[in-house]
Image (tube, rainbow, N blue to C red):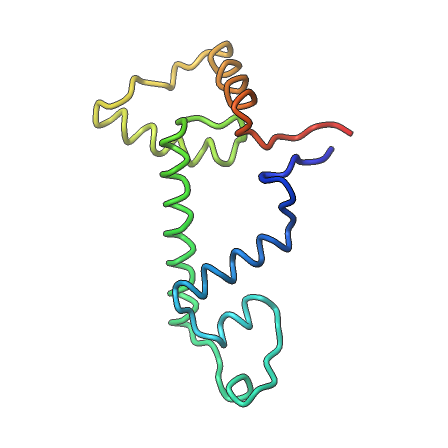
Length: 133
């Protein structure tokens, strides 16, 4: 079983580049970036500079905010995913909107409607599901 790429040409190394860019954009300190990426810094600042617990907490908060932002943007596209993990996250948004009267109660979703959601995502090219090889 293999997973289709999320984007053409995207490999795990590309995700590392994105992660590094997010940390740069958030002005995360060099010592923590080096530690996070699994690198070694033998420069003077690398020898004497060390990440602190406060730096790590700040990074966790940044990653959480980026994740929540990504889920919010995905929810705008379509409030379901055929992939379990994203769908669990989207369910929180569906419940919030249902409680605020914005969406009908989706808890009564039938097998047929779940099939239609999957079909829609596949036809829109938004589903990076598994395929057998």
